[in-house]
Image 1 (cartoon, rainbow, N blue to C red):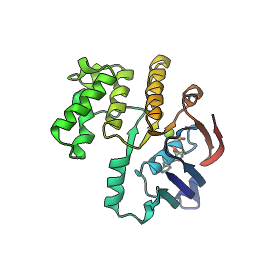
Image 2: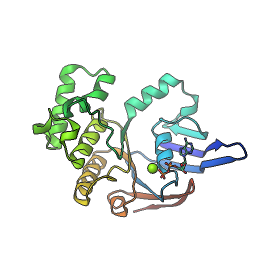
Image 3: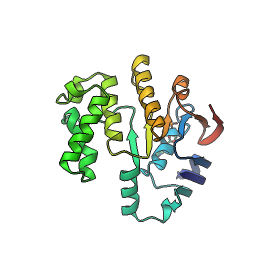
Image 4: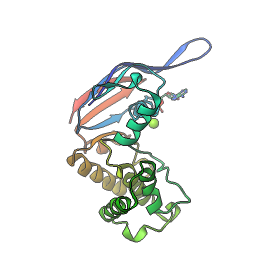
Length: 224
Ligand SMILES: Nc1ncnc2c1ncn2[C@@H]1O[C@H](COP(=O)(O)OP(=O)(O)O)[C@@H](O)[C@H]1O
Ligand SMILES: [Mg+2]
């Protein structure tokens, strides 16, 4: 489904080229639940951003299905990003001025989903995450775990094929973290491809494949 060939990302400083990612070769099949681990600065977030089409500044090839991302026009890339990817951030990135309901609705508005369909999608998600009673609250009125559930609901509202999560439990207690991982596990069972970066080894155990990174390179790659 996803294939990276000899991918490099670097920044040119005055005296030298500094590699952030170097020689990444990676094939990810549909339905995998893959975890990226590695110390801070290893390149996990950079790789997730490239995978999610949020960063186009790299060398090498990226194929999504049989389509080369580099050969696409900006508009095609942007529509591929919107239709196929959901993104979950460590710090939730909810919109403070919008209610839970409105936060989940935003990607559906971008995608011009009709009003009645939006209502039913959001009602289902709120039901699934036990947030029906919280639909009119604002993010600041929720716990961290609840905010992240809203982040997940927003990311999956558009039924993305690929869910990218950058340290989704980084700000949560272990109980809340487990709850988030169980949601991922369920989405994985339903066929969503999941790629998460995490510091917590126990989060990796919910997945099927573990890649460790160091200094912009893939160090190990194993099935679990
Ligand atoms: N736009 C950028 N300009 C300069 N350095 C960057 C940029 N983006 C990331 N880096 C550097 O690249 C390295 C990898 O960063 P990152 O992908 O955030 O690692 P991780 O998520 O594994 O902690 C870090 O050393 C970071 O400082
Ligand atoms: Mg990071």
